[in-house]
Amino acid sequence: MMDRIARCGAVFARVLLVLGGGSCLGGSALPDMAPFSHEAYVWQRRWTSPVGAAVRKAADMVERWRVLGAVMDEKGRLKLMSPDWAALVASARPVIVVVRIDGPPERASPESVRADLLRLVALWRKQEGIRLVGVEIDHDSPTARLHDYSLFLAGLKEALGGTLPLSVTALPTWLASPDLSEVLAVADESVLQVHAVSRPRPGEGLFDVTTAMAWHKAFAARTTKPYRLALPTYGARVQRDAQGVVIAVESEGPAVTGGVSTEELLVDPTEIALLLRRLNRSHPDHFQGIVWFRLPTTADRRAWSLATLRGLIAGAMPQGGAEVRVEKSSIAGMVTFALVNPGQNDVRLPRRLGLPRDCILADGANDYEFDPSGPALVLTPGHDGMIHERRRLTVGWARCTLEAKDVDVQP
Image 1 (tube, one colour):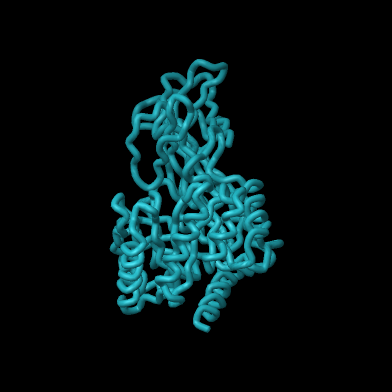
Image 2: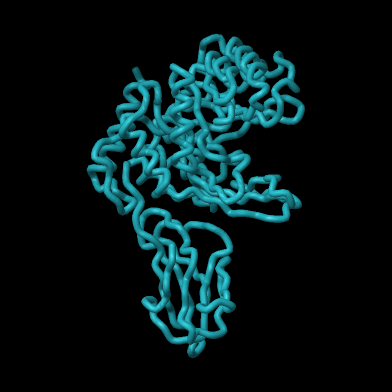
């Protein structure tokens, strides 16, 4: 009953966002609110003050949190995280604790894993004000090992003894295996990841609407149990070797490797809004909603702003773009170029700023580069990126006299 009340409250809050000026992304709201809920992963391993602040600020946007509570180490034991209990209690939202397993789960004895899992559950249950409503296992199992993985999950479910629902994350690559059915048969709920976190291919981003919808439909046909989709709120820096193979994905923190090429990838909120609209028009009855990966914070430079996420949940379609400002410098005859985002949603960096030919001695700033070799003078970004709401970014300077209207902006 309490879950039903919480869900109704979350939906009502999103309706208020739309009816009460909730078109905070500057676009039109959906005519009908989606009848599915929104949750968010709190995936940060260190609960800094920005993480706690984001949990408090975003509580009205979500029905439940899925919080990273433990990570299996190289010895097969669960290392427990230390969340900000006060922030979670203040958010007044139920919690599903997530266990991340990076390597093969067989490296640990079943007895030790079960003992660690029960210790984790006991820790969360003894926290006053925390309402623990489930356990989730996040493991990128090789497709060929799904049968073994299902047996591992069955052991964990037995250890829980029916006291808490067991959820699992699922990968699209598993769709080709008949053993996926065994995994889904054990789990009470599943979360399908529809963004390419680990192995994005060259020239492709982290998310594609058409591909995501195809995975969604195929997954829906494989299960009759409740399931959700995990959608991204962040970008990543991908490092590749000489053969183009991904050797590191840098997202929250730095990844130091010997890669010979890098590519900055992002997820455009407009693409996500299109998927949400398709889901709003039609989805299976056992589709429960969205889990956003991950909760944005002010310290997460590759993630969207909370304002952008709030607008998407409210049903708004992102609109607008960065504006160019030309400002006089303290040096005579010199101007600086700045990009300003006047709206309330994140926008992409323009891919090209064309300058008049009379601009000389120009140079870029903040990863924008000046190219004087072509028929036109241009400033281009070194990587794909975004500007958060109501932010300003200096991108270059030049010795010339011009106004903003003289700069050719190409998105």
